[in-house]
Image (tube, rainbow, N blue to C red; front, side, top):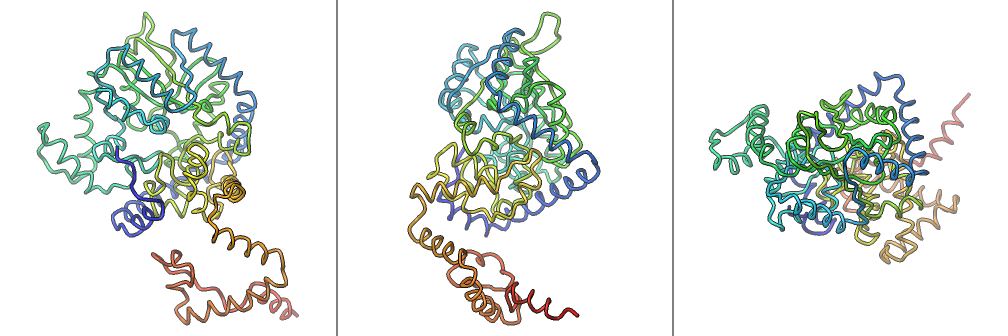
Length: 474
């Protein structure tokens, strides 16, 4: 897949002025937010579920080594194998070795963000394997040779017309000659094309939404059933997942499942919730001959003992993306790596380095919506501020930005001076806006008004307005 080109600022500029992308983002993100709000409002115990999920995650993180060892023992007891990958390279090597031993040729894949994180597809393809994504969104972006732009809806940036053109280009050689215009028709055609690959696959790779320590089971949730076919029809099933996805019991997993679909797509539950426990047994009608779990660390252990431990509570629901004004304006590709939005703005610098992900924490408005909708109450704005602080203290913040921040800090620490400056600045900005009520250009901050108007401030500061209001009271 082709990685996004250019630096963050270039990608943002392109995304903001891409009319097709803006239309696709507006259509999708607004729908997810509305559906989530309706289902949350209809569930009286929603806040209690959030608190229980947070508590379970905190308990697991405190005892992570013990639960992982228990999970491994249960997988082995049921005939499976567990592989520990310290980083992305180790994970790739483990999966390649499993495929070599299986004498594989064709590999089907369910949607797995960890597999994107470790870049397994390019490694498998370079080794000569045919890799087929079976999630419809992942299949679409595989045809387009693009990375996912959303962790739940990988092709959210694509319009129906763009998908139809992709199917024309890739399906016509297979004998599908109709130009499709309806979504249902496209889904049916993709299903027909993918079906033969399920039966030919030697290895099926899926993610693991949750790992159950008491039974050694893995759980995946899908809306298409592709995960079931991927993991039951291939001779070898490989689960790729992060070490933080383990939970103690099935009862604990149910708590998260009740939160996951509501937060992700505004559904009461996903269409398919599938539990896998080891390879096929003697009396099973189907299932893989081999069952492997690749547990990926890739920086998670470092998070566990530091200031970003709470990020390991993330269940990858995507709610923070759907409610983020930055993500919904620029889409996922602008972030430059696997994880976009608020959660990606924390994870990318932690996994790839503060410098490599420098722009992401600084692009956040810190409006707090991500924390409000997070089903496991991750304080994302606070984590983003901590990343900014670390960047500043390690000297990564550019000189002019450092001076500006220092000047602002000096002003903010002096209330009297701050009020005097604002008494001049606020009326001045209001006057620049004149009667339009908005600013189409902002001095020294043109990026704020590049693609939108900035509401003009009122004619007086808040303190002035409050003083007048108190003085007018009888």
